[in-house]
Image (cartoon, rainbow, N blue to C red; front, side, top):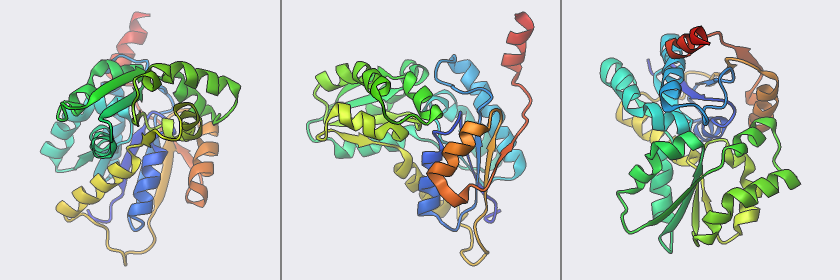
Length: 282
């Protein structure tokens, strides 16, 4: 079991930021990554739909033989974490890591003026997941805002330009006016746009991404469960997969992870029951 890969998934390319942090911190561990590009983006979808999609991908990863699951998507973490830990950890003994609480812990530790901002997809914001997670630090002043188009820019590989800056100015104006000194990038796609976000927010505002903290959590859980791969077991294996369109995904994956991405394979999954019912009703 310890030689099995870590399963990481996201709606698209955003979770590659988490996969990269895991690979950097745990170079002996194998990783299987799935981008659910057939249903990307998750952000505008209802929470119930995101839950069905996420469980569908995780079922596939578990069936393929992973030893751990990493929900490298804030929207999916908000929608499905409790169900995932019941389904996979409690019933099958497979640990599950996610990206919301690690980012919150980092932001709480980092803020100096106790004013923190969060930008995320509409689904993540409406779920209240970040508000709930920050409730453990009642002295904080929290300002949240949705930034849905950031996902589109990240998926297209657009990291600069007047259109992106204009959208960033619009999304970030209320956060900036709140006087935050720390901003949580509450979607794993957003670190791709870190330059533009930092430009608009100013150099005095610390940007917090969940990637490194999530990798720390993966390390901790593997250690507690004695699931670390033997460093002498040979080179780690990396598998990158997409459920739908692969061209843009492959280009960004190779740009971000370099030679570790040799190819991106297509994975065919059955449509979740909820989406199938919706199609039947059309």
